[in-house]
Length: 231
Image (cartoon, rainbow, N blue to C red; front, side, top):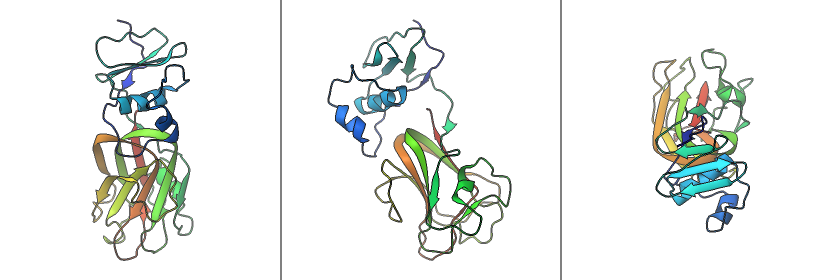
């Protein structure tokens, strides 16, 4: 059996979020003649619960529900038993926030700098402050990691912090239509310690919301937010 060196994980569990429009249109159609990317091929396989995906330029997207699957040397074979490393797909992606305190911009939350105590995102003192990262395409998200502000100025700030994922750009502050990935009740751990959540079921999403949902107003602060997938 010939296997490509670009072996990545096959996600076989359906995500809770709604399908993107391109996927919804072809779920029940003949996709063999469509020019799908490897990422789209995986997402379609998630919905069809297939066991293998073979993707190459000549044949496009092929799926196998059982038995053996062969890949040509130039193809991309995806199987459940082989996994590519998780990648932080949020790094450097566009951000926006409900408000910004001085120079503590939203982009500090996903710039890869998290050991500098002056490099972090902060909102104003407000109710349901939020941050949104646009991953710029749909990913099957498997884990998230959040570094609180390194200098903890009170336990109330890091309290009831929600991370959610969705496929549509929601203005906010209501992100209830998004799938909940993680909830950190707080208070913040010792400065410099990541809070993480590994998902038992991958969630398909493009827009990531980070929000402080505590009743009382306060600052939403984050040194770094990482979102892990296998692109």
